[in-house]
Length: 225
Image 1 (cartoon, rainbow, N blue to C red):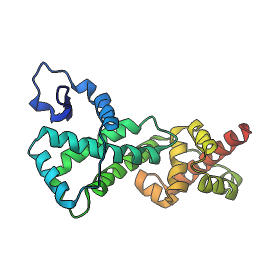
Image 2: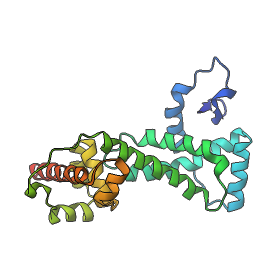
Image 3: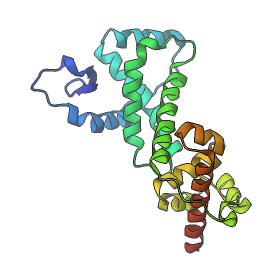
């Protein structure tokens, strides 16, 4: 657990704080506040990044605050893009990623830059959220052939207008598993087979889920006209 020393704005392992310091409940809000306050600055060199990591591992307070501040902007932007328009989990997943990155720092070897390494952890966290949400969705009953058919027009809407306000607003109205399934399939390019392997469902169950999600999207899209 990483917590914040209010007097220095530094992030510390929880065990280093006094027993009477009740900071853990405020980690989330403080971390998000620091994300806004700390500038990313210029791109660091590999040597600078290695030095920063070494100082964080040595429990240097200033270096730890610098690490979290530097990484939080990268992670928040990445996670928000991957979850839009269902952004209610963005801050939670951002914090989970930063904690995981801090805990995994001994494994950072500097083969790539720090940003790529941290965003790899963020990508894993987002995909785990997708898997969990879709896995928990009950598999729909088999539908008609017409219902299961792909709809080229809908695919074009999702592919070409994914960032448009109306598409995002429509996706936000869907049950979470439906919205994430459509994002995973059409924005991220996952096949039904890949989605099945990642969630532990059968390929047929994923196809039925996508069919229901498309139908739900189409109905809400038409209702908004």
